[in-house]
Length: 474
Image 1: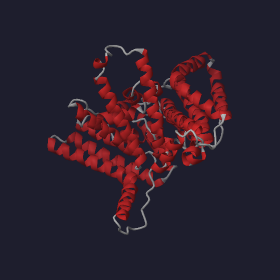
Image 2 (image 1 turned 30 degrees about the horizontal axis):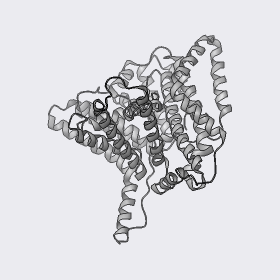
Image 3 (image 1 turned 180 degrees about the vertical axis):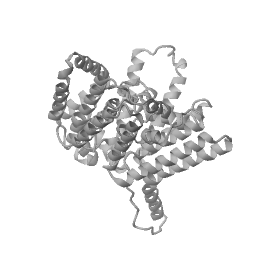
Image 4 (image 1 turned 45 degrees about the horizontal axis):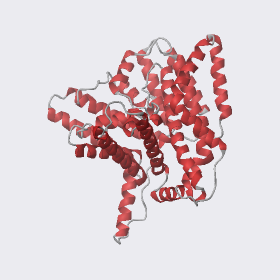
């Protein structure tokens, strides 16, 4: 049950109706939203729902103990318990198979005969997001920078709130808990903004991402040997745009739905493909996760406060972990490590700017060159990110840069969808503002007809079956 399904539309209509009737009863409102969030997750599978509940109970209990602990030693014990519980849970489900397979491969190289069977564990959807959310809550309390949940119910809603459950955005616990504690507003919160976000998100996912995935990207990355070099080059750019439309589309819809229930979620994307350097890109892409990496990994290691070599090490380790977070494959790990190296180079170049005569505001040619190099690194690194294994990625790179590589091409719809998706990176926000202004000019009694018309237009443009959101796998 994902945001672009009819089943979810029914779920949302029922949930919103009941929640609206309970706005004057804050406890009942929170209890219903929590129950609805668990029903939403249970529709995917019952065991992961039980895992979500158990993880929430553990983190809530650790948070309560952390709040009562007065001795530094006891607080450190609780912090380690939170790290072991959360990272152990995440590591077991995400990396057990990878570690077992790697150990098996090493054993074969050494001439041993390992067990032929490797245990395969199903990855619970959203486990990375709800685990990191719970861990951040306990760490913030340890640092005296967080807000303790007023009740178990408040904490369960913080973790399980269904618009953000499966793919974020990650929220600062103290800010979202304050919204929960304040209770639902009397009326709808910023309805035009909510509608514009949902329409934007559905268009990006249902139309653009679906066209790019089904007409070129998925097949090209599965069997690059069947495609020409030009088609693979276009597919790499198309996948870069598809990932943006898919993930930012999810965030847009999540934020819009949250507004329906009176909650504000942070923006997760800010024109990332207009970034003129790698640092700017990571400040604009998956913003909530980039902040999480800085606050809970990069800064605790020392950030940029130490020597330049130590800063380089901190950047490299942080982004290697970022790659590993996405999945237990060498492609993800190399993708993260590559971005760590690029950020180190960027840091070195920034430190050398005075020697290069670049003092003050950068000239236009420098910004243009920075944009080109940044976008090129992003596109090429996506091959490691998308390809199923390093062998496939190697074939992809070889054929993409081979003038003589011949094979299947691509159609004009792919080019059009790529151009539109790339353009939305630059003009998405102005278009939403225009949409809101148009919405405000329509008489109130006719607005539901306008919403239906927009929805029907998106469905009419839908090219085929809609795949699950890409980031659900992380």
